[in-house]
Image (cartoon, rainbow, N blue to C red; front, side, top):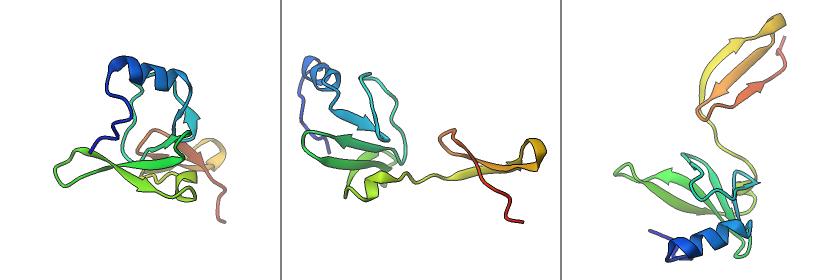
Length: 104
């Protein structure tokens, strides 16, 4: 269930401040950074990659993935609209806005 790399608060703080943890490809030095559904967590020193998923009870579980799968993020599209000058864009479940060219 847990990785057990750190057992105390102090150990967690030391691991994070050494810039060894990445969430979605960005180094995070905040111990309380809110990682959510479908986020990729990478540990540099052990070369491990995990994706945060839900188990059957609705709790977060770390699913081990390969390095190639860790390079992209899965997103759920919540809304598709058109912006200024008719440029289409979509909004994902984690708040990202993706603009894309009009297929016409």
